[in-house]
Image (tube, rainbow, N blue to C red):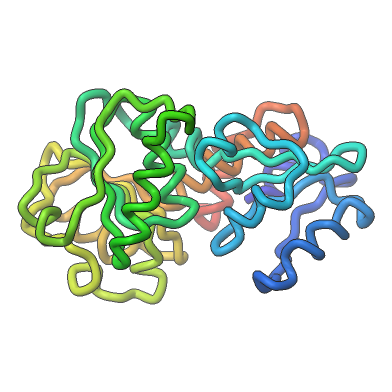
Length: 260
């Protein structure tokens, strides 16, 4: 996707984008080596998003408030952290979420960005995680008086029982459930029968094919945004940071979907 964008921008002869696999233990040292290898920046995926913020010399307001970064840029020996997950999510949504009840599943770096973004758009956000303590921590962090969260809506951790009893117009899956084609209704506190017209599902999972959660929600008549669209939007913002150029989103979208 990023290489296709670089070609479209006329930068393909000078720039390239590649994958680097690192363990959490290797992450800080590997990032420190990258500027000396002519890297101008990196996207960071799970499980390194909180560590990416920790290694940065400077951070944007969004990254600092969210407590995680998915984009690092290198300039003059300085590592700058940004979070484009939040802006990517909002850009992917088909309608405003102000005043809506939203459910975020998960409590990692992507979930933190989703909660921050939705709350900043004045949605009331509930957070569920398989480990309840992590959901509690996320809500405390993002609703603290000195956290600077631009939240106008309510933030609250919820149990599986509360999720099943609640009514949500927006559901964002920030867990890894679906990456291995697991049954989401066995592992998440969701029921296929609860989807329908008026429900917006965002599933951040992108595994090369439609997730079972997306398929079930779409079949039930819900509006669906899949992980590839959010990936395109956040990746475009990262590209803008590195190059200073407007990203060719349609080129990126086609490349992410295999040219379809």
